[in-house]
Length: 124
Image (tube, rainbow, N blue to C red):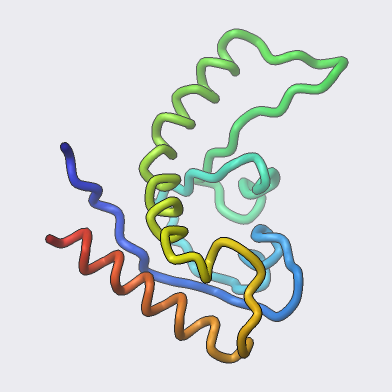
């Protein structure tokens, strides 16, 4: 089994219900130009923020996807698979699965501790 080489480097939090992309835009996280950002379909419009990013194509009723676009979506999904595995590993901790019902101030600390556990587990 091949070990993942992904590491959790940065986290951002806010109070209340906020979409991930809105949180990303508000965090003003500096991404280097050479960094390739692979995102899911919730991040449509990310290329306006960061040119070296890829999101899947979306189909509509009047504009179905071409075979090339379908192939590109498949390739992007393959590349994102490791990211989804990391998210799944983090969700082993049930505190991250549902609504957080504890003190809001401690969510960032607890998430960063879980991320540190993942990073240490990854190095084993």
